Length: 256
Length: 256
DNA sequence: GTCTCCTTATTACTCCGACATATTACAGAG
DNA sequence: CTCTGTAATATGTCGGAGTAATAAGGAGAC
Image (cartoon, rainbow over all chains, first blue to last red; front, side):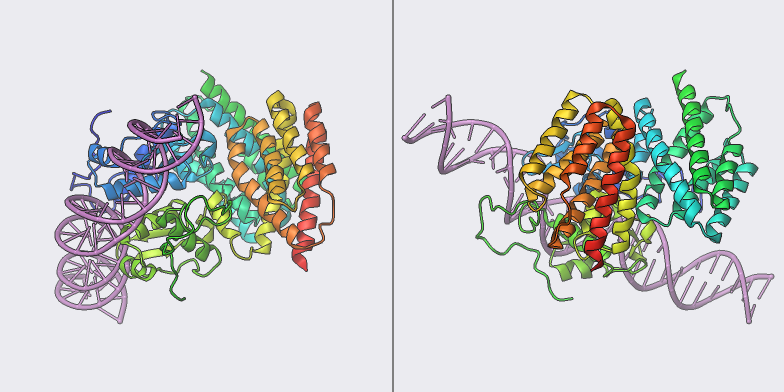
């Protein structure tokens, strides 16, 4: 698998490099974090299959050209997310997929780092189709003025920048996050990261297919209006329609 | 806050001590895992509030009477779950609550380690009320013979042992997990651990209130019959009723 | 007087080498 | 062939030393 340079060897690109949120791979991410990212993506991409046993600590750490401490800390991160399990004498094994914390934001990011599994994207949309309409219903009942304000701003930002830009996708994510936050339910808000990631990556894929078939603004406006008006049923319906259309767009762009 | 003994100092109690699943605090859990558990519960219980800065590595590790390596690995676990963030010179700070991965099984367990927040339990039930009926609907459409077999066995186990026993609660959890698995949706199954844990802990609370008010079996049977019959609407309705009743029971047992 | 830039001190981060511990696997006895 | 005890091996834990990054404070310019 070739030698990979994880150490930072380029003293240049100092200061506040505008790397946005995407890949602060150089500095900004600690060494063990980078290793965890590397191993995490390797596991999620199937390079290491469930049941596989990783090389020993000393050997693997040496192969990665890092100390055993940093390697162990990276493994602890993966263990915390349910990807691997280490036991004395037995080594570190990749756990079966149903033990993975697929809702963990990092795990989700790792899953979408490479070519994403089409089936998994479908499952994620199914989760959206369940959670988001219900969340919109609750949001219509409980939203306060500040919630509406945030949603309105996000909507405006979506209009300004299109979904083709990073800023536009961020606004789209902010809009959906604002709805979840308007439910004032911590457990639902915890899904923010998961669903937000799903929204982000999938819209990016839709974008990849050059023809973005529809203007997404009207759907979002309908949802916003219903929530602002305090109409739970309309909000739920509008959000259901939005997710269904998004699924259709994404599916068609992945099918080809 | 007093000195806490985390090291194992008792050479006795060797062999396969039947500590069940509750508290393998002695051996069985690694040292850094025990520290992560201790700090995690301390954060979830509010002993450390968001924004607080923990003592420095050297000081805290010395206070806990463990090496810095073990302490750091514990911190990496907490970082992976979004509870804390460490930066040079600034120290390790507790992140705001909306950054926490509340769906993480460990975090959920830590949240219920002490006296649970009533509001949080309510939110968790609201999530159940959203996800589980939808899951039952999908399960009714997609279940195969093995799914039905597992559910039937879990139901039988629930009848044999009551919800008063550990085995009974485990059977209850298995039943709900079997439904989620019958959806054949990985993302939904990832919620299995979270919701399953919630069900487990809350039923334990219902148990605490000595008067267990209702026989839960009929509700479960209705759900099972609908899924086995392949009737999505009936399955969704039955599960909705089950969750609503469970919420009511739990609420009444916590209100007193 | 206010702001910007730079210096400095503190803290986490990384590395190294050694020992302790737990568990698997093997070998021997029954 | 089954069971029990032993030994080998990889993870777990430890302590210390040195590096890098950042936040706070101070010097300088406007």
